[in-house]
Structures are given as C-alpha cells and as structure tokens.
Length: 281
Picture 1 (cartoon, rainbow, N blue to C red):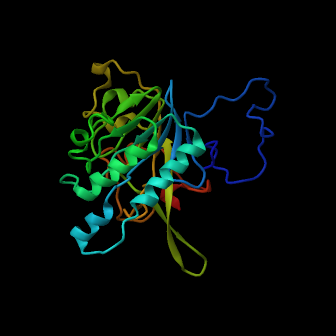
Picture 2: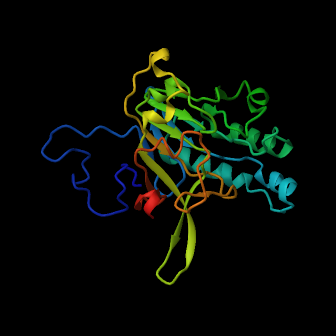
Picture 3: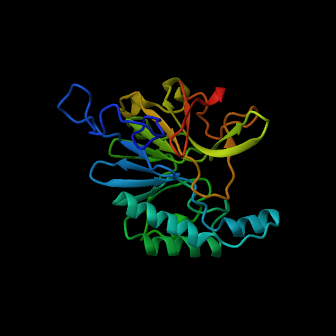
C-alpha cells in the first residue's frame, strides 16, 4: 500500500505529484491513516496531533520464547527501539500509539519486558498511548505516569478509532471514519511459478460491515452514528512474533468480528504492492 493509500508501489502520480485532483484547483484531502512505505507502521491524523501507529511490539519476546519454547535468542530490544526512533524522526509524529501488545507475556510482564519498555519510553521524546491488548497485563500500573492507556475496547483519537482487536470494540470506536487495529499479525503466503513459497507481512484494508456487531455493540444506545468506516489491520511490528497467513485455509482470524466484519478486504505488502482480495491471493 503506497503512502497515499492508493496501493501503487511506484509509477507516475496521475495528479502530477501535486496532491491535487485533476481538473481541480483544490488539494485532495489527506488520508486520515497513511502507511509508512516499507515499514509496519502508519501515520495518522488524530485531530490536534499526528500519531505514529504501530501494533504488536512484544517487548521482551526473547525472554518469553525462552520460557515458552526453550528457544535461545539474543535480545533485539535495542534494534526495535531504534526502528521506532527512526520512524518518529522520519514522520515528525507528535505521539506514539501502540495498538496493543506492547509487552509479550500474557500473564504479566517480567523483568525483560519492563526493562525494554522503560528504555523505549525514556527514548521516544513524545507522549505514548497504549491501546490495551491481551498481552499487556500490568503495564498500565507499572507505567501509569508515563503512558496514556485506553480501555480494552479501544478509543477514538480524533476521527480515528484505535483498538487491539482481541475483544469487541467500544461503541465510540465504531463511530470513527477509520478504525485501526492489530492482534492479527497479518501475513500472506506467496508462491512463485516453480512452487517456492515465502511469507510476507501485509496490511489489510476494507469496509467494515455493521452486521458483524449486531447483538454485541449497541450503537443506538450509545448515540453513535455509523459512518461506514474503513478498517485497517496492521502487520506486527515485532519481527519475531510470527504471523497469521490470511490467505491460507485453516489460518483463521483472531478478532471476534473478523472475517464477518469485512464487506471486502484487500491485502497490501509493506512496499505498497496491492495484492487484491486477500481471499484470492
């Protein structure tokens, strides 16, 4: 998905690179959520701030893998932190928003997780919002004076809704124009002409279907208007957290409202390549 949200990975801008519509003297409106080319991150217009959004950071994952699977890996915490700092510098964002799973271990962060998160928060130099995920037990209490924490159902930041995706969204989230979530660790399996295969991180974007929330989220009672929002499902920021091959049979979604919530859904690689309907890749 290109930085302009068009799905183009290159080539001439049909508007001449001017940011204006053909035949119009007025600039095209900027997208609310714009992926950073080549990175599992996006820039979002949050109203009075510009946010850098990432999902599934999984600080301290190496300690978790050692405990869970007996896998010994050197920590990549410094590399993860430097990637965030580089993205903040490149984008000029005013706020870092983590769409859940800032930490890794489900039962509560251990020393490795808290040390990595402490180093990250000390380095970023901007306010941080954490959208609580299923791996974030205890993080709000441990860093309550350093992180703005949303409820598990997410929140509205301007016209952008944010949630992790492990539970049903709050009504206010569904009243946004664009909804951003993580949790799925989106990836696609790509095969070449000779039978070789590889997995690639990917984005999913598509219109959200209101019927998926019937009986679970009461928009009328909350006084929330449905704006036919676009759903943007983020790839995982952490390179060691695995992924769900959304185009492979048997690898289902994790969110309770997916795939029913997609009226349509298209996949894009990090470099902007548009793959089309994720079910037909």
